[in-house]
Length: 81
Image (tube, rainbow, N blue to C red; front, side, top):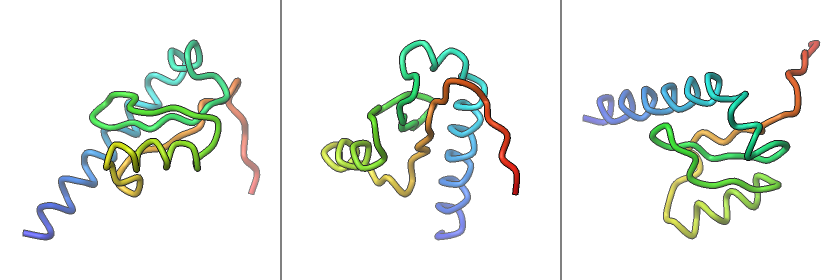
């Protein structure tokens, strides 16, 4: 039972992350340089910091650990490790 719940949550997280990647250009119009929270392929919160997002999610009784939170950048950056 726990394995099924975890698998469902991971699949939902993956779907929302893919949604973000596919919609990033469109999201720049409304959420440029902001953080967004995504659940069920919908923006459920936006703000200037992760802390702000967490407060909004908490007020909606949504677990931020089970929510995709991403920053909408001006341009794609290249990360060198």
